[in-house]
Amino acid sequence: MTLTTRTLDVLATFRPGPHRRQTLLQIAQECGLPMTTCHRIVHDLLDWGALERTDDGYLHVGLRLWEIGALAPRGNALRDLALPVLEDLYVATRENVQLAVREELEAVFVERLTGDRAVPVMTQVGARFPLPSTGVGRALLAFAPADVQDAALAQPVRRWTDDTTTDPSAIRALLAETRRTKVAISRREVTANAASVAAPVFGIRNEVVAAVSVVFDADNGPPINAMVPVVVAASRSISRALGAAMDGLDMRKAVASGAPPS
Image (tube, rainbow, N blue to C red; front, side, top):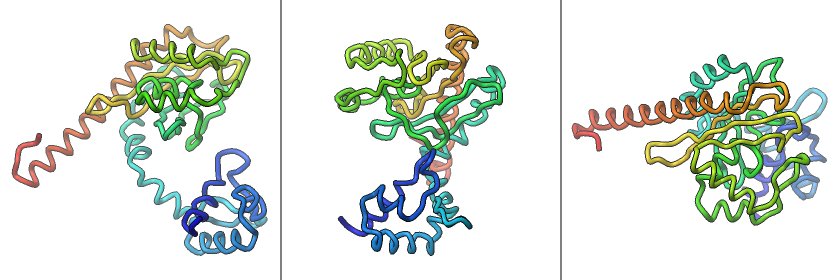
């Protein structure tokens, strides 16, 4: 194992929730490194600014690492284009609004808008969730390559609640329905009192690049059928914004080169 790999393993121990801040011992135990090796790596990361230390001795991700992460185009560039639409969707529903992208077999949440009265959810910006059970996860998985779907369903699907669909054949049927309707629905499958309606966001080559969803109270929230058209409208608006941004980029390149855009 190279020093670079060990360093990345140290950074990978930081996750949303209890692992947002850790002690040196916790990091060493989490990534299986000797304390001396972990101490040396953490010292270098502190010097560089990738990690920072609180007054009580805990370590957390540093501002410099956040600055670099903010350059990731699939996260922040997409978020910037989608945010006006997400804000409109939140104003229209007053429910949890989420935007996620696929990273291998997980959905990574790049934006979430919520209000004080919205149903509590487990997700937050930067969090990862397995694809098969959430609304955005199913919207992403339904349009993923066949080998990705096979890999996601080859491993046991976590049972979050009594209503979680875990049978691979049943999930494949749900994914087929999502491909047909371009809508994914998850009801009480991650938290017992929440429902989710999600729709895929398409790029300029008709590939799915993200998914948008609204999560609301399964018992006292709006009917699912009422949420479908507003979520689909939001996904189409974001898709159009992506297309317009790429058209503008092609035009600027053409002007710079003196050639017509392709």
